Length: 310
Image 1 (spheres, one colour):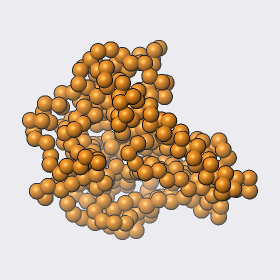
Image 2: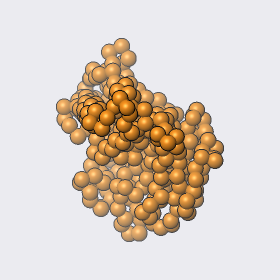
Image 3: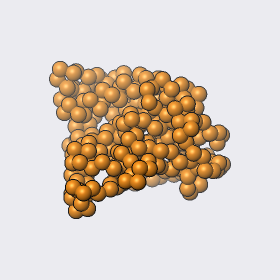
Image 4: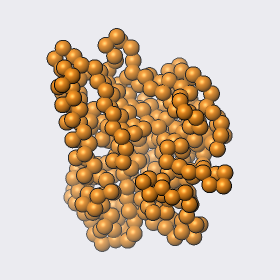
């Protein structure tokens, strides 16, 4: 899925280190299985086949892929279109991955592809579990949600195997289970978007944690930062925030919300967060102002002030 995986667990009387490592291996196998369904980096994946059939006809997919796409469309409506899986239609304009190229596209190039970005052109048939992209050239990508789904599925494998204190992480998506043997909670740091290190600590036991930031995949040209979180309404990198950290009951939910809040900005983003049961957020906006949602008041421990900079 184009990211790094990390697993940590405390052993138990019944599950020793060797067995724990075998359980981790099973979780990795599960994530790789999901990748074969939902990646856009393989031409034989279900999502790639859907994209190849755009404007031609529906493609029957597995229930898992169908459900993730269906949830993505629900998130698009909920987020006023700021979470939009048809952003993949812009692929090739912005190069922030292994094809990193610090040259922004021209305005004409963006305008030419922007009409293809519209989640409403994705049509689902629940009876056939098929997906149809109505317009030729439209592509969907699950990079903003599939990692969260995969983290939850991997955590379910660790749960079923009997591990009771662990975390699963895929890039910026994290889920923890239980508490440490000494009774303390799992905690994670909220990264400073303009400096190495963290500016806050957040307890995450039995919760998910997902961060969207403008610092991981980015470049600076002419004193302006360009990054991979693209506003589907404009075709350009979103400008309202520097980082958004979402705290939720599942990695699936946290992953689908963080980019939307990042794009919406602190005012509308916090309104969305507060409307969702059990969801909290820590936001650093474009002017380096810090916002903490109501559900995280008293939970977040600030250890520094976010560093300013471009």
